Amino acid sequence: MLKRVINFICLFSLALVIINCANRGNPSGGEKDTTPPLITKTSPENYSTNFNAREIKIHFDEYVKIKNLQRNLIISPPMDPAPEITPLGSASKYITIKIYDTLSPNTTYAFNFGESIVDNNEENPYQFYRYVFSTGEFIDSLSVSGSITDALKRTTEEFVSVMLYEVDSTFNDSVIYKEKPKYITNTLDSTTTFSLENIKAGKYLMMALKDENSNYTFDQKNDKIGFVDQFIDLPTDSSYTIELFKEKTNFKATRPNLISGQKIAFGYEGGHEGIQIKMLSPAADTIRHRITKDQQTDTLYYWYTPKIVSDSLFFELRKDSYIDTLTVRLKDQLRDSLRISAGQSRTIEFDDPFELEANTPFENIDEKKISFLDKDSIAVPFSTSLDTLNNKYQFNFDKTEDNSYTIGLLPGTITDLFGDSNDSLSYSFRTRSLADYGNVRLNLRNATYPVIVQLINENEDIIVEKYSTKPEAIDFNNVTPGMYYLRVIFDANANGIYDPGNYLQKIQSERVSYYPNIIDVRASWNLIEEFILQD
Image: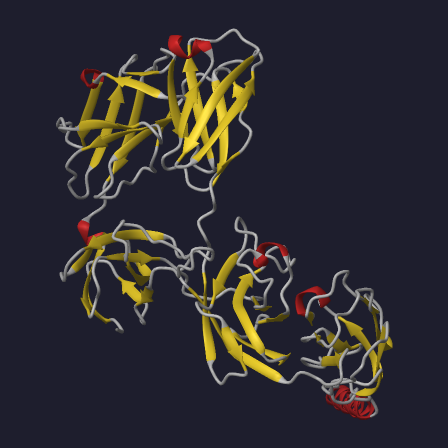
């Protein structure tokens, strides 16, 4: 037995020796390559003058490829048509740029590749390579720099274009809607600062654009914009801060259409406030109608009764100075049937009413057919109100903590515009304990009133807001525990809402300040914060 154990130990030791010897012979593979590619030659040479070539070649010491070119490449001034740059999707020891645009005389052009040039193996980037040339006798060498902020949001957008438009005898404010800029750069994704280089002396309009369509022109519906109030003169030692904002979209009605029986959808761009829809057809004197708003889209619904037998209906739509005459083709479609649902989940907040909403317009409610009981089966006093635009019945009542409620509706309690009514309905919901919430008090210093004070979450959704016209403590009571930010809007025109800027009117956005610290609201806690605002 002892001899067999000794033999086993010997064999095991010999195996370990063989394995170790084998491991010593295995190559380690060497260190990872972290060296970016190097340029060995450019043709024509970088920073050439009197440039008239139609093709540029940039040679490297190893195989390279182009990655995310559309996100990284900035050509200033922009070229139309755009140049062809190869290789795309494969590796090569040189990059080729083929120019198809007619180049302007005495102009300096720059190709900024960002981080799009990488080696083929490890994708080490050749960072921010710029190829520059001039069609004139010299390279323009002036520059201007600055930073981008967002007028309303906590964080600034990535890939913001900063543009210069030359102010000459042909300049007008509408140039940003239809022409490409003289010079352009981009903040890319790593910084909110910018630098425009190789510019010639002169007077310029400076603006920033979150260019969603990548066409270097301002699209009010989709793009954010920012601009420097005054024209800038180069050369300059000044640095500029540009605030991005989303303009209010100019109002425009889209073509209406019948989407179900006696229900017409009027789409629009811009705000719905103040829209008036008037039927011009002879049947207008014989109908009743209601207008409601879609909760997700920019659409108003025009409901009417009784049914109209006609091929078309004609309408006039007005908003401020906007007037349009619209035609709706009719066809035989079924009318929607009344469906009622609760507007909230089973938990209701102390400051919110209980709401009922429906897919057809509410017309009447009989409160005598409603039972409203708490958890002890005690009747709860209540009142109802109808939000006609949003088509919601609101039940207002005094709530107590940690209570449950039941609302019962007998058949025929609610009728809609078409005379349809409900079957028996019952809804249950509850309140939480006050100890489940936290409270926040904010004291402002150096504020210019009036102000809108908002408590917002990580996604910048407004949780609650307060309006203040004088120095006073701002209280946010019964706040669900969580992490929040405090935002103060200086309501310069005292209209109760935040107003963004407008480029054509040369108006900047209303001032917004963020409390520097995140607010940690905890259950049963009372927070008192002081916000010292900058003058």
